[in-house]
Image 1 (cartoon, rainbow, N blue to C red):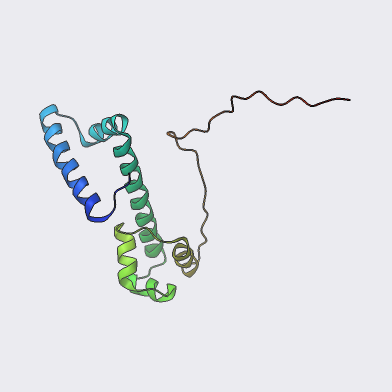
Image 2: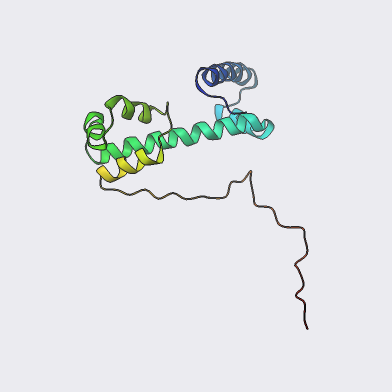
Length: 137
């Protein structure tokens, strides 16, 4: 189950509060706690990975804009959107559509490459069936 919006923010706040208390008691770092929770709880791991992906997008969009020496308003104007939309993208509060990412790339002289890479959690399965034999004759 993936959580969104206020429910997700409340979930994160509660988890962070609980984690802080646990870390203080155990002397662990936040990285240690996150690693342990990801190993222990698949739902936590899925939410954590989704949040990291969203923040990576946000960081890349901001880097793209800054490399082009544009303000949020200038980038928005060239891409046919509003400054507030660019601000939301850069903050990580929303995930952009591929169309918008493509527009942002084009107006800054870039192009988008979309790749699918294997996830450690979802390694491809091998078929258990034996290969079919060809009939001869």
